[in-house]
Length: 165
Image (cartoon, rainbow, N blue to C red):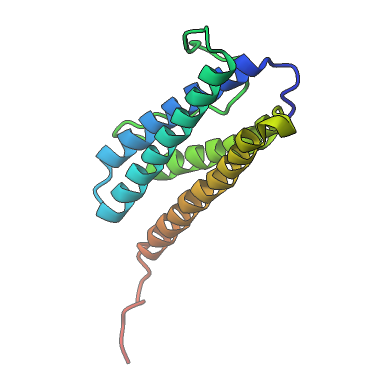
């Protein structure tokens, strides 16, 4: 992901906005799912997004101390749209959308880390760590999606499958 055409301020605001949107989606999913383990995983992901937003906010305040944080309605940085779930949205669709967003967040944080010099190695290293965490989030979602897909396949009725000898 090439971020050179964006200002650091735009990038940090886009990151905050993305983390807030991810938090909102994961919180909504956690409220909708009935499986307690899955609910806990989405709450965990939501909390992770909150932590990321907090760090990005600190970086913004350090780099732009005289500016008030005002998130744009639309950011110039392209992020894949996250599906905000409603009760009719299939969980598989939501998980796939979230996986795409987590992969994009990984790519974004990798590229964003390169915007900081060696003088800002702490910020740079933290952003690279965030990129790694986003891949972990992707894996959590991928495992859940694969598990759900297996369950759906296992739930298919096969004539004579349970007939004994």
